[in-house]
Image (cartoon, rainbow, N blue to C red; front, top):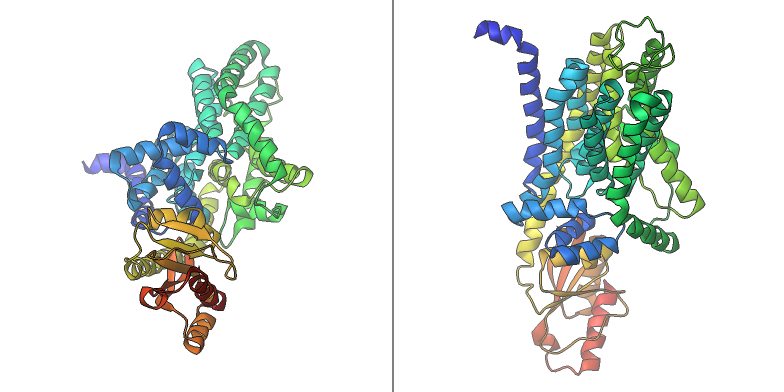
Amino acid sequence: MPEQFRKNRSRILISLYTLLLFSLNFIRIFDNNFWGDEAYSIRLAQMRLPAMLAETAGDVHPPLYYILVRLGCGILGYRGPVFHMVSLLPYGIMLILALTVVWKRYGKTTSLLFVTLASLLPNAVRNNVEVRMYSWGALFVLLSYLYLWEIFTRNRVGGYVGFAVSSLAAAYTHYYCLISVAFFYGALFLVSLARRRAFLKKTLLCCGMTVAGYLPWFFILLQTLKRTAGDYWMMWIPTLKECISFFFSGAFPYLLFAALLLSAAAFVFGCMPYSNSRKSPAALPGRTLFPDAAWVLAGLLSMFGTFLVGILVSRLIRPLFIVRYLYPVSVIAWLLLGFCLSRLRGRVIYAAAVLVLLFLSCLPQYRTTYQNDRAENQRLNDTLAATAEISAGDVIFTDLAQIDWTISDYYYPGVSHFLVTLDALPATEPGTEYWLILDASKAEESLKSLRAMDFDCEEKIGNGILGTSAVSVYRLIPSQTAGYSSTTKLSTIRRCASSL
């Protein structure tokens, strides 16, 4: 046993290290505080499949993620931790891939760095448990990239099939994942032109299979583009600097991005000479390009191409891109950084330096994130306890768009709700309980007005939280509104609301 441990010491230690990092992300799933987009995911997951497909077809995202959430919750139940668990699952699969496929192909240094980046970077910590499609998109993009290496180095049919299936899954998860894998296809096509006999026929068949698989949703994509080009909520366009810094979010994003580019350049140019002893069995004939170098360039092409397409489309048509859409392709940056550094002389020193940077910058941020999660979840529980009287048949008026859009439906099912301006509330009915859920930043001024003018409002909680939004909640007191005429009662409500 001691000898077996010595033989596999690195794998055992890194596996334990990976388990520790996984646990840091796992403990964050016990949370019931969801923002608007997360609550939207939950709402779609609770629909019947035809209704869900129709709803997402009218939205701006393809349906695969919502189907996966529906399947997961159908097995484990519709509860807060389960929603998070569905997003944590692909992160866990990526860690398993890092300890198996990545370790075997690219070495333990690549595996170690990838595990650390995927577990500690702030954008990873957020998306590993967020009830959205980004962690699943990251898994499918990563699988596509790993299969692309399989094609470049071994040129086997299984690699093409795996590449087509995983890239289709990516395209059905997010439209910017579709763009990311499209650049993989571009790189594959270029390599196929260089090796016509060995690659071209399989490549054309793979592309045909992918196009056929995506065709049922392609026309919905065209309708989505047409609809969002005319009207969409985005008002700004990310800068190149913001996009570059997102790949390695934290205290040293540009330093790590520069390390990626420099190590990739050193590796690619080092792969060019024919005398390279690391030439793969499927290496291209002649002195022009080796598979590993083509694979690295394909990854860089996908990274840069995804955000450049997003920025270009946003400038030519209208803003249709935000930096979080880059999360799925960020895993390519993490894998490439580990891979390229591991191929350099002095790789142990470089890897150790990256790990130190990550620990120094990411661990304090993780601690802050975890503490904020706990504090916000406690405030949420306090808010729900204070508003436990809200029940089906009541009516909520709110000035917060997310509360009306999805949050009210999640926390107060069966309760009608309206997004209002505070000087024009909808008409009210006698015998109905009315509630105000308002932006908490107005709470101090609201309380002063209530005390000074003796309005018919009762504060339930002054600084609560719902769906990550700080809120103040008020109730109209039935005893003081009873017997008013409809006009008088509505006037009273409007006076109360306008003072808030």
